[in-house]
Amino acid sequence: MELARPLGDCKSADITDTTSLDILRLLDDDSPIIRRITVMIPYGMLDAALISDEDLGRIGRAIAKNTNLTTLRLCCAINLNKDSSRHALHFLDMVGKNRHIRHFSLHGGYGFDAIETEAFGHLSSFIKNNENLESFEITHGATPKVVGFLVDALERRRGHPLKKITLNYSGVKDDDVKEMMSFFMNNPSKAPGRICLDHNNFGDNGCFHISKFVRKSGNIFKEIGLRGNKMGPCGLRCIASALTYHATSLERFSIGENHKIGDPGVIAFVEAFASYSNSIPSHLAIEEINIGPEGMKSLGIALARRSYPIESLHLKFNHIGDYELMSFLECFRSNPSLIPKTLDLTANCLGHWGLVVLSDLLRNRCCSLERLNMANTDPVPYDTVSYAVNSVKCNSTLRELNIDTCGLADEKCLDLLSSVVCDTTSIQSTYLSNHTLVKFGNCSSREISLFLAVNSNPNKSLIARHKVIYHHFAKNFRLDLFQDMQPAVLVEVLTYVYRGFACCDKNEKEQKHATKTPGNLHRVDGLLNNSLGVTFLILKNCPVIMYGRKK
Image 1 (tube, rainbow, N blue to C red):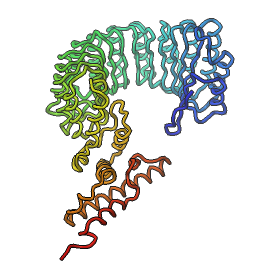
Image 2 (image 1 turned 135 degrees about the horizontal axis):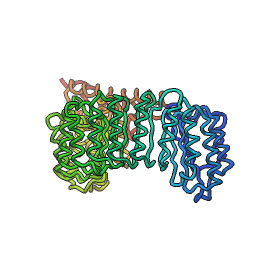
Image 3 (image 1 turned 90 degrees about the vertical axis):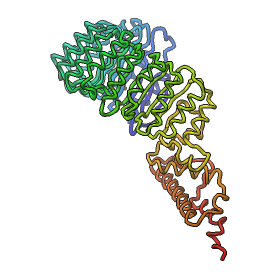
Image 4 (image 1 turned 135 degrees about the vertical axis):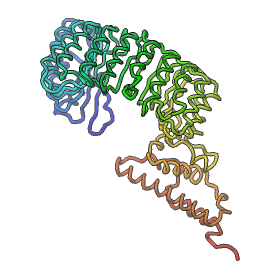
């Protein structure tokens, strides 16, 4: 078991590899350190279970009375036998008595159908009676009864509607989607704001019923997840036309791993938004849908018509090559400020010309790209990747870059990155380095990781000053550079150096006072701790300042 680091006043615990005594110790007396918890119910083939039947009941009673617990995740193991099922059901009954849980998820496992009827009875009662419940998730609950139980529970539920419903890997079919959407149409006040039906068995007919509800209800859904189903171009066209029927508030739309969509589906989707480009969801996930050049071009044209960029576009595993990427990026050449803020091109077939066009967009100061992922792409020549990485140096928006496994050795990647985040060839080059990038793949260099952390400071002028002082004054200090300076220039240099150290000292004290831990901005090996140290050395070795000019 491992307790996570605190996030505000919240902590979490994963109770999957510890003793029952440790679990009970954490849960007893309404322990204020536990907010989120994962409980494994290991039975059947897992004979060496860490939690016995008796202890499982004790843990259930402890969870039932703990008033601080807000998130509970249950994982049932495979092959539940008759005796094990009885104890598991008793555990679910105890857990259902906790009315303070806000987020509940059940990962059923492949043997969950052994207790599905009784288990869903307990869960149905839990949904009906817990007025504080906000999100409910079932994964691997492969049973035709799951939607019926859920609809019955929602119909009798008291209090506010659920904010999110997730039924993943649950065998949901077209008729199940029809039953759920019909219920929501008759009871719109009980519809959730977010719904995820990933990796199920419905197709275009199910999409038609979803679009029918969306068209009637207006802007209820903020998130729709349909990843990994049997959707085709017709189903996607139905949903897109329904989304444009009202001023939709949809924020996230996931249709990845629907292999039938292809170019016709993407073209139909963007054509539905032809006159409503700003209504395109801010987060689009269209991974692994066999998109081609025409689909990429149509998507780029639609996004370039917007008045502001979308937040994220995920295009993983689409076999995107140079031609497809160039068709997409060409749409943003005249206005690079509309390119998606997050662009995920993981596991595609990028080559020389695609990266060159992408690099040219990054060199444009109006480019809005903040996160770029090109991991696991085909190997490309070193010069091409070098050109792409160097384009980041003059970019002031990109915060995360991942080019892992692009065919480069780790040492070459680190050398490239070092020249981008802190070019030490001259003071001017250091000052003009990239001060925005905060994450670069799996960077293993301690010094580079430190400067990436320093870049997270919103005061970019302070970051530039810090890098200049560290590399040109504290680390590689050369007095001969100041020997022949004119007094007016030297005064400006001394002021710059002194202010830089003073800012570092002030920031260090503020971070120590706020977090009681050493700050990032000043924690660099070799950096002078005395803010007057460098100033004194310069004054001492410059005769013009110390002794005046000879008459």
